[in-house]
Length: 114
Ligand code: AMP
Image (cartoon, rainbow, N blue to C red; front, side, top):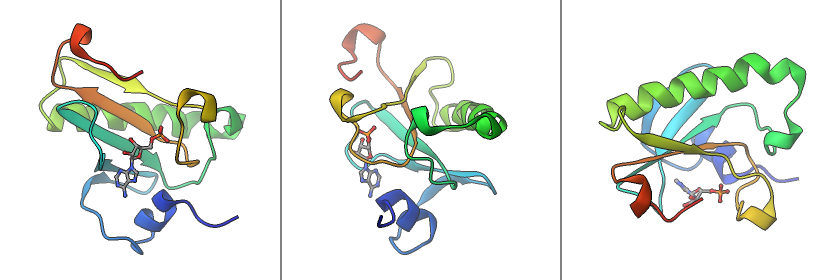
């Protein structure tokens, strides 16, 4: 199976500005934001989707959430944001490489995605 667009971004094949990176994951702005602040936290490991994560991924999954905290704070929405993980085509997943959506910048009632 060919590499996902996120793997190609991680590998530098597709240029992208990283908001954050470390040895386990990167964070980038979503190209088609659904909220005033909409970023993605993406593990370097190409787990296809959440349901494919294994017990050995436990620390990585926790790390992604802590990075989401950091990124939300850095983007000025630390006091109010949502994390969304789409799992499967039926809920609108389009890129089959696990990622966390960080969405913030407006009130819950105004949010339309998820
Ligand atoms: P999902 O529907 O959960 O698979 O979300 C995939 C997300 O990736 C969507 O919100 C897209 O807007 C976003 N996206 C697709 N291509 C890129 C890209 N090159 N850079 C940043 N975000 C992207």
